[in-house]
Length: 340
Ligand SMILES: C[S@@+](CC[C@H](N)C(=O)[O-])C[C@H]1O[C@@H](n2cnc3c(N)ncnc32)[C@H](O)[C@@H]1O
Image (tube, rainbow, N blue to C red):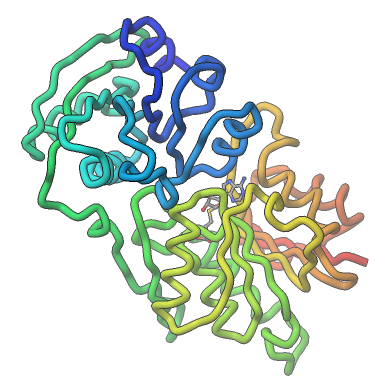
Protein backbone atom coordinates (compact mmCIF):
# COMPACT_ATOMS: atom_id res chain seq x y z
CA UNK A 1 0.00 0.00 0.00
CA UNK A 2 1.34 3.49 -0.77
CA UNK A 3 0.77 4.59 2.84
CA UNK A 4 2.97 1.73 4.04
CA UNK A 5 5.66 2.53 1.48
CA UNK A 6 5.80 6.01 2.99
CA UNK A 7 6.07 4.58 6.51
CA UNK A 8 8.71 2.04 5.45
CA UNK A 9 11.12 4.82 4.49
CA UNK A 10 10.92 6.59 7.91
CA UNK A 11 13.77 6.15 10.43
CA UNK A 12 11.23 5.84 13.26
CA UNK A 13 11.67 2.75 15.40
CA UNK A 14 8.15 1.35 15.28
CA UNK A 15 8.85 -1.58 17.62
CA UNK A 16 6.00 -1.96 20.11
CA UNK A 17 3.81 0.62 18.37
CA UNK A 18 0.12 0.27 17.60
CA UNK A 19 -0.97 0.24 13.96
CA UNK A 20 -4.48 1.63 14.13
CA UNK A 21 -7.03 0.81 11.40
CA UNK A 22 -4.26 -0.51 9.11
CA UNK A 23 -4.78 -1.81 5.58
CA UNK A 24 -3.79 -5.35 4.58
CA UNK A 25 -0.11 -4.98 3.72
CA UNK A 26 2.80 -7.47 3.59
CA UNK A 27 5.37 -4.99 5.00
CA UNK A 28 3.17 -4.29 8.04
CA UNK A 29 2.28 -7.92 8.56
CA UNK A 30 5.94 -8.97 8.50
CA UNK A 31 7.04 -6.19 10.87
CA UNK A 32 6.68 -5.13 14.48
CA UNK A 33 3.88 -3.97 16.74
CA UNK A 34 0.19 -4.60 17.30
CA UNK A 35 -2.79 -4.07 14.99
CA UNK A 36 -5.86 -2.35 16.39
CA UNK A 37 -8.68 -2.80 13.92
CA UNK A 38 -12.45 -3.13 13.78
CA UNK A 39 -12.02 -5.57 10.89
CA UNK A 40 -12.13 -9.18 12.05
CA UNK A 41 -10.70 -10.49 8.75
CA UNK A 42 -7.64 -8.28 9.12
CA UNK A 43 -7.14 -9.35 12.73
CA UNK A 44 -7.45 -13.00 11.71
CA UNK A 45 -4.77 -12.50 9.03
CA UNK A 46 -2.37 -10.94 11.58
CA UNK A 47 -3.01 -13.66 14.13
CA UNK A 48 -2.49 -16.35 11.50
CA UNK A 49 1.13 -15.17 11.16
CA UNK A 50 1.61 -14.90 14.92
CA UNK A 51 1.11 -11.12 15.19
CA UNK A 52 -0.98 -9.48 17.94
CA UNK A 53 -4.23 -7.90 16.79
CA UNK A 54 -7.15 -6.48 18.77
CA UNK A 55 -10.45 -4.77 18.18
CA UNK A 56 -10.97 -1.36 19.80
CA UNK A 57 -13.43 -3.16 22.11
CA UNK A 58 -10.71 -5.46 23.50
CA UNK A 59 -7.57 -3.36 23.13
CA UNK A 60 -4.80 -4.26 25.62
CA UNK A 61 -5.20 -2.14 28.74
CA UNK A 62 -2.30 0.25 29.23
CA UNK A 63 -2.37 -0.25 33.01
CA UNK A 64 -1.89 -4.04 32.60
CA UNK A 65 0.36 -4.20 29.54
CA UNK A 66 2.15 -0.85 29.52
CA UNK A 67 1.68 1.86 26.93
CA UNK A 68 2.85 1.41 23.34
CA UNK A 69 5.82 3.56 22.28
CA UNK A 70 3.52 5.31 19.84
CA UNK A 71 0.69 4.77 17.40
CA UNK A 72 0.18 5.20 13.67
CA UNK A 73 -3.40 6.00 12.65
CA UNK A 74 -4.28 5.18 9.05
CA UNK A 75 -6.79 7.92 8.35
CA UNK A 76 -9.94 6.16 7.07
CA UNK A 77 -12.19 7.27 4.19
CA UNK A 78 -14.82 8.35 6.71
CA UNK A 79 -13.58 11.49 8.47
CA UNK A 80 -16.07 10.92 11.27
CA UNK A 81 -14.47 7.52 11.87
CA UNK A 82 -10.97 9.07 11.76
CA UNK A 83 -12.06 11.58 14.38
CA UNK A 84 -13.47 8.78 16.50
CA UNK A 85 -10.14 6.87 16.41
CA UNK A 86 -8.31 10.04 17.36
CA UNK A 87 -10.57 10.76 20.35
CA UNK A 88 -10.38 7.11 21.40
CA UNK A 89 -6.56 7.13 21.29
CA UNK A 90 -6.52 10.37 23.32
CA UNK A 91 -8.86 8.73 25.86
CA UNK A 92 -6.96 5.46 26.35
CA UNK A 93 -3.26 6.19 25.79
CA UNK A 94 -1.10 8.37 28.06
CA UNK A 95 -0.81 12.06 27.32
CA UNK A 96 2.30 12.76 25.24
CA UNK A 97 2.25 9.42 23.36
CA UNK A 98 3.63 10.03 19.84
CA UNK A 99 0.96 9.67 17.17
CA UNK A 100 1.59 9.57 13.44
CA UNK A 101 -1.29 9.97 10.99
CA UNK A 102 -0.97 8.75 7.43
CA UNK A 103 -3.31 8.73 4.46
CA UNK A 104 -3.76 9.35 0.79
CA UNK A 105 -4.00 12.99 -0.23
CA UNK A 106 -7.12 12.34 -2.24
CA UNK A 107 -8.68 10.68 0.82
CA UNK A 108 -8.47 14.06 2.57
CA UNK A 109 -5.57 13.33 4.96
CA UNK A 110 -4.73 17.05 4.91
CA UNK A 111 -7.96 17.72 6.80
CA UNK A 112 -6.42 16.11 9.87
CA UNK A 113 -4.46 19.31 10.43
CA UNK A 114 -7.73 21.13 11.14
CA UNK A 115 -9.02 18.27 13.25
CA UNK A 116 -5.84 18.23 15.33
CA UNK A 117 -5.90 22.02 15.72
CA UNK A 118 -9.55 21.93 16.86
CA UNK A 119 -8.54 19.46 19.58
CA UNK A 120 -5.68 21.71 20.65
CA UNK A 121 -3.06 19.22 19.41
CA UNK A 122 -0.09 20.63 17.52
CA UNK A 123 1.13 18.84 14.43
CA UNK A 124 3.95 18.75 11.95
CA UNK A 125 4.34 17.20 8.56
CA UNK A 126 6.91 14.43 8.54
CA UNK A 127 6.91 13.35 4.92
CA UNK A 128 4.93 13.02 1.74
CA UNK A 129 5.34 10.81 -1.34
CA UNK A 130 3.29 8.48 -3.50
CA UNK A 131 0.34 10.85 -3.17
CA UNK A 132 0.29 10.23 0.59
CA UNK A 133 1.14 12.43 3.57
CA UNK A 134 2.43 11.63 7.03
CA UNK A 135 1.88 13.94 10.01
CA UNK A 136 2.93 13.65 13.63
CA UNK A 137 1.55 14.91 16.89
CA UNK A 138 1.40 13.88 20.53
CA UNK A 139 -1.78 12.69 22.20
CA UNK A 140 -3.37 14.97 24.77
CA UNK A 141 -6.51 14.93 26.91
CA UNK A 142 -9.65 16.18 25.18
CA UNK A 143 -13.01 17.04 26.69
CA UNK A 144 -14.92 14.91 24.14
CA UNK A 145 -16.00 11.39 25.05
CA UNK A 146 -15.48 9.04 22.05
CA UNK A 147 -18.78 7.33 22.99
CA UNK A 148 -20.59 10.53 21.95
CA UNK A 149 -20.13 9.27 18.36
CA UNK A 150 -22.94 6.73 18.95
CA UNK A 151 -26.20 8.09 17.57
CA UNK A 152 -29.72 6.73 17.19
CA UNK A 153 -32.15 7.50 14.40
CA UNK A 154 -35.55 6.13 13.45
CA UNK A 155 -36.02 4.23 10.20
CA UNK A 156 -39.56 4.41 8.85
CA UNK A 157 -41.07 1.54 6.92
CA UNK A 158 -44.70 2.40 6.24
CA UNK A 159 -46.30 2.64 9.68
CA UNK A 160 -43.39 0.91 11.36
CA UNK A 161 -40.50 2.65 13.08
CA UNK A 162 -37.27 0.97 14.06
CA UNK A 163 -34.72 2.75 16.25
CA UNK A 164 -31.27 2.23 14.75
CA UNK A 165 -28.02 2.73 16.64
CA UNK A 166 -25.16 3.87 14.52
CA UNK A 167 -21.51 4.73 14.63
CA UNK A 168 -19.15 6.23 12.06
CA UNK A 169 -17.97 3.55 9.67
CA UNK A 170 -21.09 1.38 10.06
CA UNK A 171 -23.08 0.86 6.87
CA UNK A 172 -26.36 2.70 6.88
CA UNK A 173 -25.09 5.48 9.11
CA UNK A 174 -28.15 7.69 9.52
CA UNK A 175 -30.23 6.36 6.62
CA UNK A 176 -32.08 3.28 5.41
CA UNK A 177 -30.53 1.72 2.29
CA UNK A 178 -32.85 1.47 -0.74
CA UNK A 179 -31.91 -2.18 -1.29
CA UNK A 180 -32.65 -3.02 2.33
CA UNK A 181 -36.01 -1.25 2.04
CA UNK A 182 -36.92 -3.30 -1.05
CA UNK A 183 -35.94 -6.51 0.74
CA UNK A 184 -38.10 -5.66 3.76
CA UNK A 185 -41.05 -4.69 1.56
CA UNK A 186 -40.73 -7.97 -0.35
CA UNK A 187 -40.27 -10.42 2.51
CA UNK A 188 -43.88 -10.50 3.82
CA UNK A 189 -45.28 -11.28 0.34
CA UNK A 190 -42.73 -13.99 -0.18
CA UNK A 191 -44.44 -16.08 2.49
CA UNK A 192 -47.31 -18.51 2.17
CA UNK A 193 -50.65 -16.77 2.95
CA UNK A 194 -51.59 -16.79 6.61
CA UNK A 195 -48.13 -17.78 7.81
CA UNK A 196 -46.44 -15.76 10.50
CA UNK A 197 -43.01 -14.70 9.38
CA UNK A 198 -41.47 -15.74 12.69
CA UNK A 199 -42.99 -19.25 12.46
CA UNK A 200 -41.74 -19.72 8.93
CA UNK A 201 -38.35 -18.22 9.44
CA UNK A 202 -37.48 -19.74 12.86
CA UNK A 203 -33.70 -19.50 13.27
CA UNK A 204 -32.55 -16.68 11.05
CA UNK A 205 -29.08 -15.49 10.19
CA UNK A 206 -28.66 -11.81 9.27
CA UNK A 207 -25.40 -11.89 7.29
CA UNK A 208 -23.56 -8.54 7.22
CA UNK A 209 -25.86 -6.92 9.77
CA UNK A 210 -24.51 -3.32 9.68
CA UNK A 211 -26.62 -1.28 12.08
CA UNK A 212 -28.95 -4.25 12.66
CA UNK A 213 -32.00 -3.11 10.68
CA UNK A 214 -32.76 -6.57 9.27
CA UNK A 215 -32.06 -8.25 12.61
CA UNK A 216 -34.47 -5.91 14.43
CA UNK A 217 -37.18 -6.22 11.77
CA UNK A 218 -36.94 -10.03 11.87
CA UNK A 219 -36.73 -10.26 15.67
CA UNK A 220 -39.84 -8.10 15.97
CA UNK A 221 -41.70 -10.72 13.90
CA UNK A 222 -40.64 -13.51 16.19
CA UNK A 223 -37.57 -14.87 14.39
CA UNK A 224 -34.70 -16.11 16.59
CA UNK A 225 -31.98 -13.92 15.14
CA UNK A 226 -28.24 -14.38 14.88
CA UNK A 227 -26.62 -11.32 13.29
CA UNK A 228 -23.02 -11.32 12.10
CA UNK A 229 -20.69 -8.74 10.62
CA UNK A 230 -16.93 -8.59 10.00
CA UNK A 231 -16.89 -5.07 11.49
CA UNK A 232 -16.77 -4.77 15.28
CA UNK A 233 -18.63 -1.42 15.24
CA UNK A 234 -21.45 -3.00 13.23
CA UNK A 235 -21.77 -5.85 15.72
CA UNK A 236 -21.93 -3.37 18.60
CA UNK A 237 -24.42 -1.21 16.63
CA UNK A 238 -26.66 -4.26 16.11
CA UNK A 239 -26.56 -5.10 19.84
CA UNK A 240 -27.55 -1.53 20.62
CA UNK A 241 -30.28 -1.53 17.94
CA UNK A 242 -31.83 -4.72 19.33
CA UNK A 243 -31.70 -3.31 22.87
CA UNK A 244 -33.14 0.06 21.78
CA UNK A 245 -36.18 -1.76 20.36
CA UNK A 246 -36.54 -4.11 23.33
CA UNK A 247 -35.71 -7.14 21.16
CA UNK A 248 -33.63 -10.27 21.78
CA UNK A 249 -30.99 -11.60 19.43
CA UNK A 250 -27.36 -12.56 19.20
CA UNK A 251 -24.79 -10.39 17.39
CA UNK A 252 -21.36 -11.89 16.69
CA UNK A 253 -18.24 -10.89 14.77
CA UNK A 254 -17.74 -13.23 11.85
CA UNK A 255 -15.99 -13.12 8.48
CA UNK A 256 -18.93 -14.49 6.47
CA UNK A 257 -19.43 -17.90 8.18
CA UNK A 258 -16.09 -18.05 10.10
CA UNK A 259 -17.76 -17.90 13.55
CA UNK A 260 -20.65 -20.20 12.56
CA UNK A 261 -18.96 -23.57 12.01
CA UNK A 262 -21.53 -26.36 12.21
CA UNK A 263 -24.51 -24.00 12.67
CA UNK A 264 -27.55 -24.19 10.42
CA UNK A 265 -30.52 -21.84 10.01
CA UNK A 266 -34.04 -21.85 8.61
CA UNK A 267 -33.22 -18.70 6.67
CA UNK A 268 -30.27 -16.53 5.81
CA UNK A 269 -31.29 -12.94 5.04
CA UNK A 270 -28.80 -10.45 3.65
CA UNK A 271 -28.03 -7.25 1.84
CA UNK A 272 -24.53 -8.55 1.14
CA UNK A 273 -21.35 -6.53 1.06
CA UNK A 274 -20.53 -5.52 -2.44
CA UNK A 275 -16.86 -5.92 -3.27
CA UNK A 276 -15.35 -5.20 -6.61
CA UNK A 277 -12.50 -7.59 -6.15
CA UNK A 278 -10.71 -9.05 -9.09
CA UNK A 279 -11.14 -12.56 -7.74
CA UNK A 280 -14.83 -11.96 -7.21
CA UNK A 281 -15.38 -15.65 -6.43
CA UNK A 282 -13.51 -15.15 -3.21
CA UNK A 283 -15.34 -11.96 -2.29
CA UNK A 284 -17.55 -12.13 0.80
CA UNK A 285 -20.81 -12.08 -1.19
CA UNK A 286 -19.71 -15.05 -3.29
CA UNK A 287 -18.67 -16.96 -0.16
CA UNK A 288 -22.01 -16.07 1.41
CA UNK A 289 -23.88 -17.67 -1.50
CA UNK A 290 -21.63 -20.64 -2.24
CA UNK A 291 -21.41 -21.77 1.39
CA UNK A 292 -25.07 -20.98 2.21
CA UNK A 293 -26.40 -24.53 1.63
CA UNK A 294 -24.00 -25.85 4.30
CA UNK A 295 -25.55 -23.40 6.79
CA UNK A 296 -29.21 -24.02 5.92
CA UNK A 297 -31.51 -26.73 7.25
CA UNK A 298 -33.27 -28.80 4.58
CA UNK A 299 -35.97 -26.55 3.07
CA UNK A 300 -34.19 -23.49 4.46
CA UNK A 301 -33.93 -20.41 2.29
CA UNK A 302 -31.46 -17.76 1.34
CA UNK A 303 -33.07 -14.32 0.80
CA UNK A 304 -30.82 -11.70 -0.74
CA UNK A 305 -31.09 -8.21 -2.14
CA UNK A 306 -28.43 -6.98 -4.55
CA UNK A 307 -27.70 -4.42 -7.21
CA UNK A 308 -29.29 -5.70 -10.41
CA UNK A 309 -25.98 -5.85 -12.28
CA UNK A 310 -24.15 -8.13 -9.86
CA UNK A 311 -23.48 -11.66 -11.09
CA UNK A 312 -25.37 -13.38 -8.28
CA UNK A 313 -27.73 -15.47 -10.46
CA UNK A 314 -24.74 -17.57 -11.61
CA UNK A 315 -23.60 -18.14 -8.07
CA UNK A 316 -27.12 -18.98 -6.84
CA UNK A 317 -27.51 -21.43 -9.70
CA UNK A 318 -24.17 -23.03 -8.86
CA UNK A 319 -24.84 -23.28 -5.12
CA UNK A 320 -28.55 -24.19 -5.12
CA UNK A 321 -29.28 -25.44 -8.65
CA UNK A 322 -31.88 -22.67 -9.10
CA UNK A 323 -33.46 -19.56 -7.58
CA UNK A 324 -36.49 -17.25 -7.80
CA UNK A 325 -36.55 -13.54 -8.46
CA UNK A 326 -38.96 -12.10 -5.88
CA UNK A 327 -38.63 -8.42 -6.79
CA UNK A 328 -36.85 -6.25 -9.33
CA UNK A 329 -37.11 -2.47 -9.24
CA UNK A 330 -34.38 -2.13 -11.90
CA UNK A 331 -31.79 -0.92 -9.41
CA UNK A 332 -32.13 -3.82 -6.98
CA UNK A 333 -33.27 -7.40 -7.13
CA UNK A 334 -34.46 -9.69 -4.36
CA UNK A 335 -33.54 -13.35 -4.82
CA UNK A 336 -34.69 -16.47 -3.03
CA UNK A 337 -32.96 -19.83 -3.20
CA UNK A 338 -34.18 -22.87 -1.29
CA UNK A 339 -32.06 -25.75 -0.06
CA UNK A 340 -33.66 -28.95 -1.35
C1 LIG B 1 -24.63 -3.60 2.35
S1 LIG B 1 -24.21 -3.64 4.08
C2 LIG B 1 -25.78 -4.18 4.78
C3 LIG B 1 -25.98 -3.73 6.20
C4 LIG B 1 -27.39 -4.00 6.79
N1 LIG B 1 -27.69 -5.42 6.81
C5 LIG B 1 -28.44 -3.26 6.00
O1 LIG B 1 -29.20 -3.94 5.30
O2 LIG B 1 -28.49 -2.02 6.06
C6 LIG B 1 -23.16 -5.04 4.13
C7 LIG B 1 -22.53 -5.34 5.48
O3 LIG B 1 -21.67 -6.49 5.31
C8 LIG B 1 -20.56 -6.33 6.16
N2 LIG B 1 -19.46 -7.18 5.67
C9 LIG B 1 -18.48 -6.87 4.77
N3 LIG B 1 -17.65 -7.91 4.60
C10 LIG B 1 -18.10 -8.90 5.41
C11 LIG B 1 -17.64 -10.22 5.69
N4 LIG B 1 -16.54 -10.69 5.11
N5 LIG B 1 -18.33 -10.96 6.59
C12 LIG B 1 -19.43 -10.45 7.21
N6 LIG B 1 -19.91 -9.22 6.98
C13 LIG B 1 -19.25 -8.44 6.10
C14 LIG B 1 -20.25 -4.84 6.13
O4 LIG B 1 -19.49 -4.47 7.28
C15 LIG B 1 -21.66 -4.24 6.09
O5 LIG B 1 -22.13 -3.96 7.39
